[in-house]
Amino acid sequence: MEIETEILVVIIASLASLIIGIINIVFNQKISARQNKIELKKTKIDLFENRRQKLETVKFEISNRESAVHNFNTMEDVGLIANYFSKNIKDVIAISHLLNEGFVNKLKMSLDKLNQHIIDEKTGSKVNYEKAFEHVKEMSKLNELIPIELERKLKEIENRINTLLE
Image (cartoon, rainbow, N blue to C red):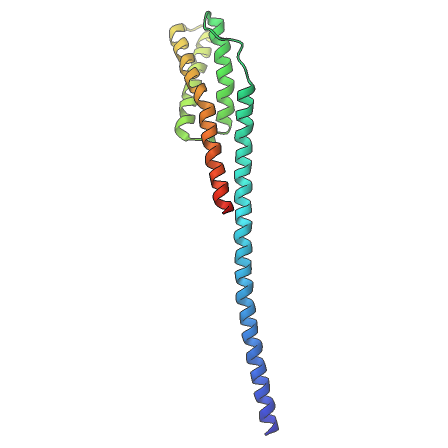
């Protein structure tokens, strides 16, 4: 009878140990899942912070870049202002993966038109100065939209970060 009691005690102890082991496994899985979720949120927040920093850098560079030209009196003025717009557009194109594709495509097309005028002038082809002037006006309008687009994207990123923090 004593052996049966010992076997019964061993069985009960083994079952208790098994139940405690299963409970530990379940709790460890839940803790691990929570930790993974927190790490994923941290990674996403870091990614958005990196994007925000890139956008703010470009926005700062563009806002501090000034053009000495205020009127289009000569073709030289048009060239100088086109160079100014071109720098701004190139800065935005460098972070195009962060922005609205349609807006970036408009910027690229505008830059392509300007580059074609430059190529025509350098190769001695006939340059249509009226078209060049119109393209610079178009670039001017797009240039005015750049800070608005950057600010819109910055707000979007800020909202996403805040959502992750909740």
